[in-house]
Amino acid sequence: MFPIYLKTAWRNITRPKGYYSLINSLGKERTWCILGDRTESNVDKVHFARVLYPVATVGRHELSPVRVTGWIMGWLLINSSNRLLFLQFLQRKFVNIDFKIQIMFSKIILSMLLLLVLGYRLHAQIQTVSGRVIPIAAMDKFLHQQMDSLAMPGLSIAIINHGKIVYHRAIGIANVDSGEPITDSSIFEAASLSKPVFAYLVMKMVDQHLLNLDTPLYKYMPYPDIEKDERYKLITARIALTHQTGFPNWRYFDMADSSMHVKYGDLYMKFTPGTKFYYSGEGFLYLAKVIAYLKGLTLQTLETLYEAEVARPLGMNHAWFTGNAYINKYKASGHVNGKPYFYNGTPWPISFPNWDSSYFNPAASLHTEAVGYAHFVIGLMKHKGLSSGSYREMMSPQIMLPKDNTNVTENGDTAWGLGIAIAQTKYGTRYEHGGNNNNFQSAFLFYKQQQNGYVFLTNCDKGSIFNKRLREFLTEGK
Image (cartoon, helix red, strand yellow):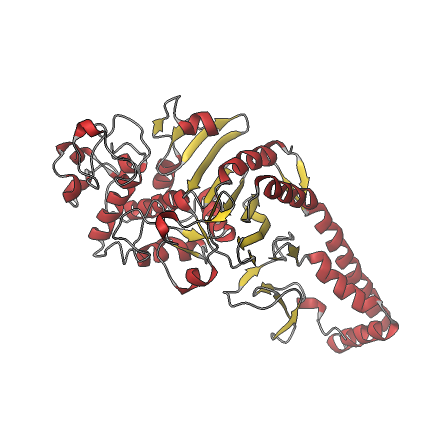
């Protein structure tokens, strides 16, 4: 017997990794093992009452509304005794209603369930920016073909239509040596996808009047690392978020020309702040230190501010800048040339020799998965949490990119906002950012007008190529 009462069968579906629960009319959870083994995880909730899309997945499998509706309809229609039980249920609920009316009610409910299935079939597809439709099966096929052709071990991806996640997959292998699979719990390095998230935090601090976008940062906190060069006093939060500080990307990896006589590991300036665009994680780091200082925190405690101001309000349930037990347990291994690879010999992305996973790196240390980050993207789409002024500043072009910049030549970007790349396309304004820690690569993009976009993270060095192909597929549908 299938003891689910129809009136609440679609109230809620939860998925603790391999188990699915339907809430019955008594308010108690009744759980069945559908696929795989249970693993420890926070329970994510998917409300199919509002969005009938196949986003509850285990590996490459999905628990769709069609499947659950099939269970309900099958139980009702399989034999007469079940139908009698259903009618008896109606009679208990509606004692004074004529038996023929009860029969009519049962037919109406069955018809509604059938319409639900048909409606799901109509919506179980992805809409591209150009208006084309991609069936779910075609999306699955595309991903598997790309992963095979590029030899990508693992992938976490979420696609957004009309401001909602309509497709999610966590597929492949977490470590090619062990054969451990990617699951919904798997965590990836987001690399430079860290930067837009941190920029959002900065704008929240601007809204709270902690700092001003155009006040020189040295007035809040002098920076001993570069105090020998007075030009650094021109740096503001706006200049840092738009990559105009004149700092190298990272002092240990983007070393000064020998003619500058800069000691290895010392911070230096390539040009006067505010005069050029040069992508720099160091600028974000200085800004993070200023915010930590103003809040009475350090880089090792700044995570608490991020979680309170960004992660929790936007529903980024699995997204952290600093290490923890969950990351240690579920983090996938990075790969280069098809083999597991630890950058600098450590499983954590380190920008400074004396750092470890306890340090908040605003430009590179975010760890997450596609659904968690997609909630941030949706927050940007819907301008959640920021004042209209701060949102407008963040999403408006602040500097036009030079034509020989790789963001222009490779991605077609034309400008930079506060922490985010901007491109003008025939379909409207596109916002995006990529991430590359070498052994982990990632990207997101979205069109604010259409409320469409995607985010993916992969545990290898093929993400940049994959992103080009994915962008074309989800833009033109081919």
